[in-house]
Length: 303
Image (cartoon, rainbow, N blue to C red; front, side, top):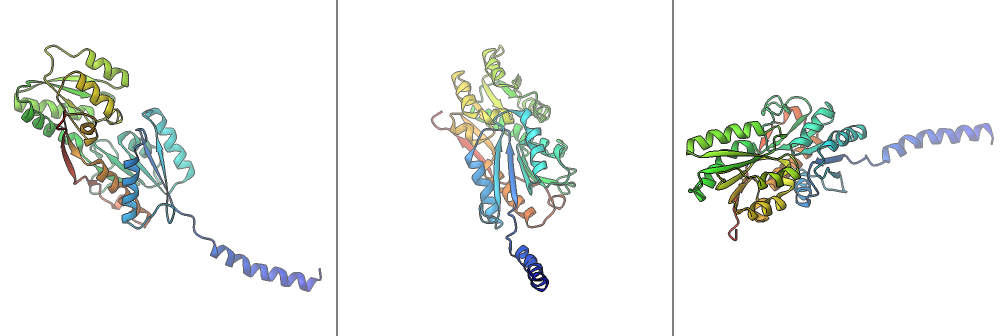
C-alpha cells in the first residue's frame, strides 16, 4: 500500500472510531434484589411496579435480578460480596438479614432496604430523616405493632389469660419485641409465655412441649424465619387448636385466624420507587427512610 493511501486510511479510521463509540447504546443499570426467603413472585412484581412508577421498565432501561437464599442465612454475606464484586447499580436488600449483610458488604454501592424492624436500632442508618452513608429504604416498624396485635387477639379471645409468644432468639429484633409484649400484657392483665425457635426443627419442638398451664392463644413474633414458613406454621398452630395472630396476610391466607401489619406488597413497591429515584441520581443519604403507610387487618372467616 502506498504511503499516501495508508495515511488517508488511518485518518479516516481516527474519525470513525469516536463516532462508533458515541453510537454504542449505554449499558442498562442492573438492580440486584436479595432476600433470605424462598422465591415469592408477588414481591418481584411489586419491586418492578415501583420501578415502573419512576420510569424504569424491565428489559427496556433497567435489568433486575432476584436472588433468594431459601432460608440459608449463612449464604447472605457471600451473596452480598458477589454483588459488590460485580459492581451492580443498586442492591435492593429486603428483609432484615439481607439488609444487614448488604450494609456490611459495601459503603459505596447504593442500598435500598426493607425491614420490619427499627433501622436505627439495627444500625442500618444514623436516623430516619438523615440516613447517611449509602443506604436508605422502607421500614414497617412491625415490632412496634406487637402490642396492637396482642390487643386485637384479646378482643377476639377475651377468655384467654395466658398468651404464647413465638419468637426467634437469633433475630436482632426479638429483645425489643419481648419487652413491648410484656408491657402490653401487663396493661391488659395477661400472662406471656415465650416460645423460642430459631430453626425449622425448633418450631416443631416448641409446640410439642407447650408449657402448663397451656396458653389459650398465640402471638407469632416478627421474623424472616416465620414468614418463610407461613403455610407450615399456620397448619402446625391449627393442629394445636390455638387461635393466633400474625404479622402478614399470607399467614391468614394459609389458615391462620387473624393478621395485622403492613402490606408486604406495598412495602416492596416502595423499595422499587426508591431504587428508581436513586437510578435517576438521588443519593441514599438524602432520602429519608420511608415508613409503610398501608396496613391490613385480615381475618380468615373459615378458621
